[in-house]
Structure formats: C-alpha cells, structure tokens
Image (tube, rainbow, N blue to C red; front, side):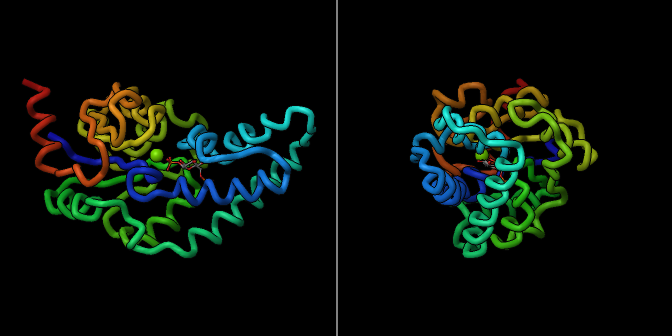
Length: 221
Ligand code: G16
Ligand code: MG
C-alpha cells in the first residue's frame, strides 16, 4: 500500500527554472559569459554551486577564487529571492493543487525532495505549505540527485519505507534518484528523457491520484 508521495519542486509543482534562468542570466551578463535557455536546461535539479561551476566553465581563461565563487553564488541568490518574492498561488502548475488535496484526502503523506534551499519560501508563497508533512533540507544531503539520498531522507522523515512511496520528477537525474531509492517513479515530460520512470505523463495536468494508484496495483500483478 502507498503511504506517501515525495515531490520534486522545480518543474513539478512550479516553474522555478524560469526564475533561476533570469537570475543566472544577470550574473552571466555581468561576467560577460554567454548564457541562454538551452544552457539553463543543464542546471535543472543541480545545486547552486554546481550550477555556477557550469556557467563559469564557459569562461575558461578567467580565474575565480573560492571567495569570488561564494560571492557570485550569493548574488545570484539575492536576484533569485527578489524574483520569488513576486510569485503566488497562480504559479502552481496545472493539476497540482487537486492532486495534493486528493492525496491528503486519501490519508497518504506528502514530502518535498527539492535541491533548492529556497524551497520552504516558495512552498509558502504558493499557499500549499499545509499539505506537506516533510520538507527535506538539502543542506543536510551531501550527494545530490541522481543519488537517492534526498528521497531516502524524505521516506525516513515520514517514517515510511521507500517501497511505500511514489516519487514525482521532471528531470532525468531526479527519476534516477527515485528509482535508486526503490520508489515508484512518475516522470513528467518526454518519455525519451524519462524512460526509467514507471509511469510517464506529458505534463502535470495528467496527474490523477486514482490513475496513479491503479497503475501501481497493475504493476504488482
Ligand atoms: C532546483 C533547481 C536547480 C537549482 C536548485 C538549487 O532543484 O532545479 O536549477 O540549482 O534547485 O536551488 P537554490 O539555489 O534555490 O538552492 P529541484 O530539485 O527543486 O528541481
Ligand atoms: Mg525538477
């Protein structure tokens, strides 16, 4: 029996990738580094520092000290926080609020497994904080996705077994993390990218609790 759902944030609950893109664009242009939406795709699901490293790779002749990097990452986060200060419940992706209500109504737990240190602020601004029993703190998780650690931590904080959990992700590394944790994986997006998922939907509006539970039952037969 399924006892919990564990959600990724960016690309599943809201499109924070666009806001990350805008904040990184300001940093990149200040540094004279090329940056566009295609390159931003590579930053999805990875940490702030790893994202910065990927951007700085594009200026190989420049030398950035550890403290330069800290300062750039901190400034990017200031820009990002300005942007998330403007979002509200209208930024929820289609179908998510209904799904969260249905899950809670069925007596099933909910956790968030996001790499974003800003996740608690975003969840509050979206007006969905009351649905979540657990928001894993990514600062406590040394190995990011595709390592399963953040999903395993979500299960342990919810006091359920990973086998009793469903994970929901939009990124390949995220689906890999869910599978390595031993959970049922739902992928949102292209079936080419997310082929490791147990159930793939083209976008969040296709997510229906009863459909998901039926798929899990059928898989067991
Ligand atoms: C999100 C984004 C990443 C971002 C990371 C860290 O992950 O997809 O692009 O780099 O959070 O964000 P912050 O700088 O706010 O700590 P997820 O796991 O929600 O998809
Ligand atoms: Mg994501």
